[in-house]
Image 1 (cartoon, one colour):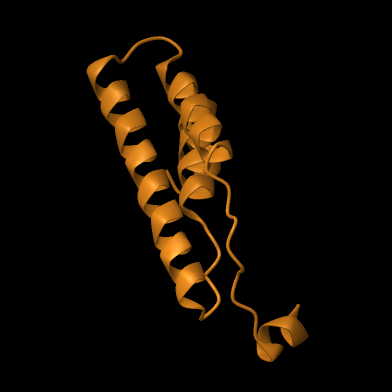
Image 2 (cartoon, one colour; image 1 turned 90 degrees about the horizontal axis):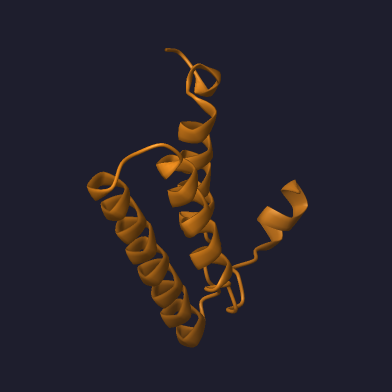
Length: 94
């Protein structure tokens, strides 16, 4: 194995769902945004942990895809609502 293409589709889908759930933008320097960032990341991390725990307890046909769908569903229910960090350097590079 030397890359994502060597993984099965369900495994790659599950890993992608995990990364998407935990990849949240850094918050602005406002305290309220920092607190909201922490809350979103904490809840999403918990959701991923729960989905993986269920997967480990109930493996079977379609379980990887079910776990990925569950993570995506939970992530959609916990959107980023805070103001992301922006800097002039970041905006110039984009």
